[in-house]
Image 1: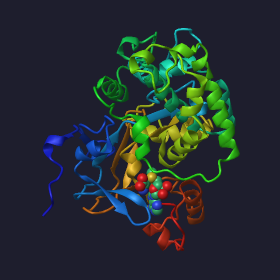
Image 2: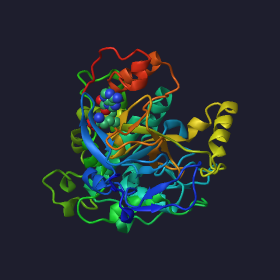
Image 3: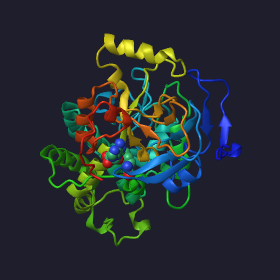
Length: 413
Ligand SMILES: C[S@@+](CC[C@H](N)C(=O)[O-])C[C@H]1O[C@@H](n2cnc3c(N)ncnc32)[C@H](O)[C@@H]1O
């Protein structure tokens, strides 16, 4: 007999169906909280140790194809360097032309948001600090080198600075937006606003929660990382422009003296965001971030043919689809290991960075829940090379074993 772990009180069944399969929605998983809380809210999941693969998520019950198992808002999300003008910098929803609101009292900000709620949520978390930074050179270098993670690291630094200075609290969160966007409130913005308003230690706090994600030791810092780190520090420097030693925000200052003091010392910036912090952050983002693929605004994400239309548009207008992508790091979803024959599908049904993970087939209790980290359409050698280079392990999934490539190799964990 089946163990009925999926309590009705924790699930709602969505009306109708989507892409031909039954859909279930967790009511609680959209707000990123601590890993323990997320697991407690999803008793159909179990976090276990996997030989030579660290931790992994497992099915704690039999699961039917199409069931939605995880719906999660990211800890951190940023548009790809080429998509900065056409993507909401908070939720990664594509923007229609220049209809996104531009945040910034000086009118010079390059921050763009799809809605007042995203504008407000971003300002509460990081955008007030980001507006004072000058990340143009970092963005340019990221565009030229097709690097996306330094921009996520820059956002993380802004979260830390903003928190340290007490900026972006609810009093300063009123939107400067003059948005004409058609988008109303979105789940990610709502989740983030709820998080920001929560008392006590913030839930879904990337500064602390990213620490739970796996990382890789970097014995030597790659030269390009050093260069981009310097550009990041350079971009943060305006935050210390008006710094007066008397108004320092060093660790000995009380939080009330930090609040509103408005700037940090150059030493504080160097100390907080040194090369060790950068390497640690980049390593975690590299191993754990997801590419967020959204559809152009004119396509309806609930229309199953929209994906096909987007793919056709991509073929006829090379690069346009990739202009509408970004990257995001999640907490619970980062516990999912890879298989070249994954049992979960990843989608972004809200056409933003809220990710949904549903069963691609029936899954038996006790089975590991897996996703693919790479383009699964590639041949064995290309898959193995991508996984080894990008994630430091040799895949021994049934497909790789069958294709004969799972020779002895070592995982970095
Ligand atoms: C996103 S994390 C997945 C969760 C990770 N196992 C943990 O403990 O945090 C990615 C890392 O997990 C490990 N991993 C994922 N899938 C694996 C697999 N099929 N075989 C071996 N290691 C794997 C690799 O070290 C990879 O860099």
